[in-house]
Amino acid sequence: MDTRNLLAPRARAQRPAAHNPALFLFAALLCAAGVAATYWFFVRTTTGQLADESAFKEAELIAPATERPVIAFLDELPLISVFIAVIVVVFVTILRHRISPAVIALGTFAAANISSQLLKRTVLDRPDRGVVTLDFNSLPSGHTTLAASAAAAVFLLASPRWRPLAALFGGSYAVLAGAATFLNLWHRPADVVASLLVVAAWTLVGGLVMMRTNPDWNRWPAKGAAQWSARAVALLCAVPGVLATAGSLGLYSYARWHPAAVTSAVPLYFWAGLTLIVGVGYLVSSLACWLFSQQAGDPDRGSARR
Image 1: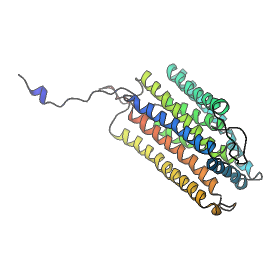
Image 2: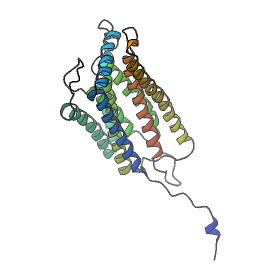
Image 3: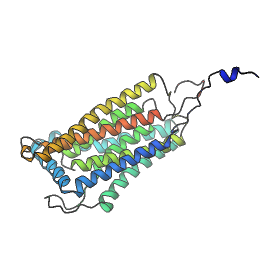
Image 4: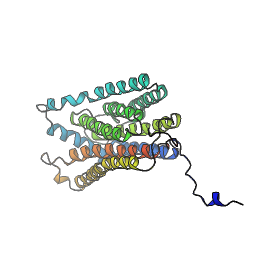
């Protein structure tokens, strides 16, 4: 009996794209749970309503009408993002002949925006907790959903090689659009945070479908410089995400237990809301960067690197 084959090291089995779909589904459910938690605290509780409305009022003082034209151009970000996404979809569909990925990206974009409107207008309500505020629900933000979902469509259509950068720049763009929505007094911080999580959930679902149905171009080396660069970008997103989220929670806690410290000169709720937007935006960007890179399929043996 020849035992040489038994002693020889076996080659690792080639992994398909999205080889662990449970990770996508679990992460999507985690984002959905984040939406539910954001809604419960900031809309269903008196403490949350007071914190969110206080941030909104403080934003009026920080960016009065005389200064708002300086940041008014940020209102155009959602429409700009849709225009960019349309260009990318057309490019992928016509020049690269990838009809299925374009359909999936557009479906993800539509699902995020439709679900946001359904949640805001029909599913979720805003109870009266004695806080002087709007008497109707505004969570999640349609403005932010539009911008973030357009960035998500571009992210999904990017090749594995460029997805980390798409996560970094797309996430930064979504954070900027969400912050502008808050600064221009379109929505409260919680509305923006919820919309970012809605888009993240649908991006994970759309990404799973994309990688499973289009495995031929969703390939990337599992080891080497390729994965190290993806991890570096994921870390680059995670650091501000963790720091901003921790800072936001600290500010909320301090303002909650030291109400005398909250004055017009020290707008703690404003900064807590703004840093929460930044933190959540970069955390979901880091998650997307890491997960999509880690779940890319192995390149065909002997083929050139894509």
